Length: 198
Image (cartoon, rainbow, N blue to C red; front, side):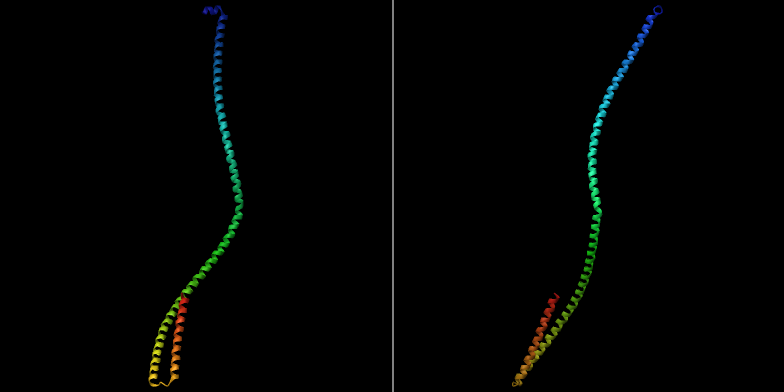
């Protein structure tokens, strides 16, 4: 074969060229396959990126809605905050009025408490006076009855011993009438005092 190559140098170069060409074709085929694989890979990546892009667009749209709602909330909050100073001034005014009312009520409570204490003291004093009047009434009634019994005894003795003294009898009757009026007045006074206490 060496002899053939030496004898036919053109054939030797031709075989070498074919081998190089075959190698180049093989390399080009390999490159084409790599390019095709890369194309599929890029297409898949492009699809993935397109999906991610759509997802991001949806998220951005959702974010826009949220941002719009937040802007509306901020606007409402800002309007509310701007009204706070006026509301605080109104509350401050109401606070001053309430403090004045509380002070007035406390003063009224103190006055009422003092009046109740005075009333209870006066009631105790009046109850003691009423008891004294009732005791005095009992003593006076007893004295009146004793005097009335004395008048009767005198009248009986008078009728027995001095029937001609009519004037003395009239005087005794008037005296008995006066005693009864005094007793009735004391009863009315005690009843009036009792009603006043209740």
